[in-house]
Image 1 (cartoon, rainbow, N blue to C red):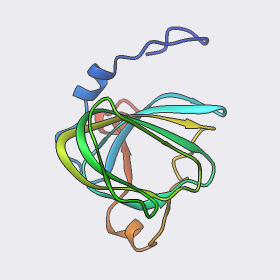
Image 2 (image 1 turned 45 degrees about the vertical axis):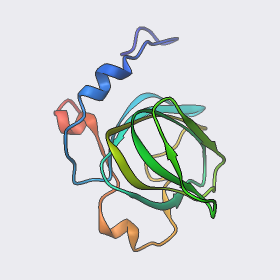
Image 3 (image 1 turned 90 degrees about the horizontal axis):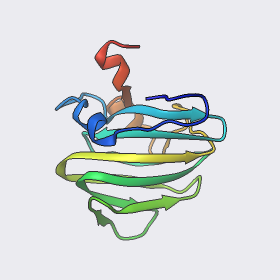
Length: 143
C-alpha cells in the first residue's frame, strides 16, 4: 500500500493471507518497495529451494510464519522459526532444504535492489526442474 512517494505502511499479516494454498513454482512473492537502492518483498515458499546465490545484492530474510531448514554455504543446516532473521552478503550460497511448517512466509530486504533474474543456481539443472517464482499480482489478476 503506497501512502505517498516518500513513505508507505504495509500489512504483512494481510499479505500473508492472500498467498494461495499451493503453487507449482518454488515461491510466490509480492514487492513492497522496488527502487535501485533496495527492494522489499514478502514471499511464501512452497517447495525446497535449491542452492543458489545472488550476484548483485545482499539479502536479509525475516521469517514471519512457518518453519524451514536453511543452509548457508557448507555450514550445517539450521532450523529457522518465526521471528528469526538471517542475513548474508551477495554471492553467498544458500538454500531452503525443507519446509517443516506451513505457511512459510518471509519478509526480505535486498540491498541494492534484487532483480528477479538475479538468481544463480549452483547446479544449473535445478533451474529447469521447477519454475522459481510467480508474482502474487499475476495470480490475483491485478497485474
